[in-house]
Amino acid sequence: MRDLPSESAPARTFNIEASGGRELRALEQLVTLGQGRTFALLVAGDTQPMVDDIRDFRNSVTWWLGGLAVLLALSILALVRWGLRPLRRVSEDLGKIRQGEIRHLEGYYPSEIEPLVQDLNALIDSNREIVERARTHVGNLAHALKTPLAVLQNEARAAEG
Image 1: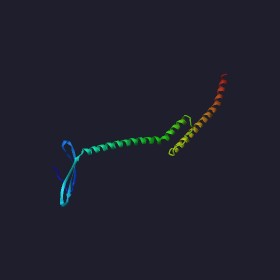
Image 2: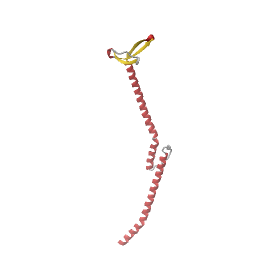
Image 3: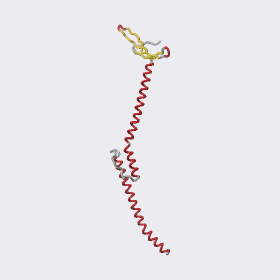
Image 4: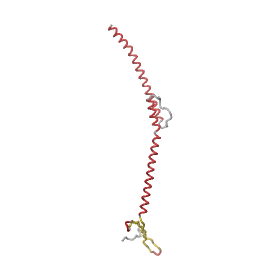
C-alpha cells in the first residue's frame, strides 16, 4: 500500500501495473474542499496511447530532420560547386595558356579572385620575358661560337692539305 500525498508534496505521478500486463500512468493529488476536508484523488490511464504518440512523434521528427539534413547537404554541395566555379575557370584557362590557345587569363572574374588573376598574368608575362631573354642569349652565344669554329675548321683543313 502506498502512502498518501502530503501537504509538502500534494501531487505525485507513478506507474501501476494492471491486469493483462498493461501499464497505467497514475496521478495522485490531494484535493481540499471546504471546511478543511481533504481527499486523495487518484486518476490513472493506459500508457500505450501515450507511448504510441511519442513513437509517432519521434518517427515523424526523425524523417523530417533526415530529409532536412539531406536537403541541407545537397544545398551545401550546390553552393560549393557554384562558389568554386570561378576557380575552375581559372584552372581551365591556365590549361589553355599551357597549350598556347590564349596568352593571358581574360574575362570577368569575381573581385575576390581578381588579384590572383592579375598576379598570375604578371607571372605569365615575367616567365615569357625570361624565356625570350634566354632565347636571345642562346642565339647570341651560337652566333659568337660560329665564327671561331669556322676559323678553326678552316685551319684544320689547311693543315691537312
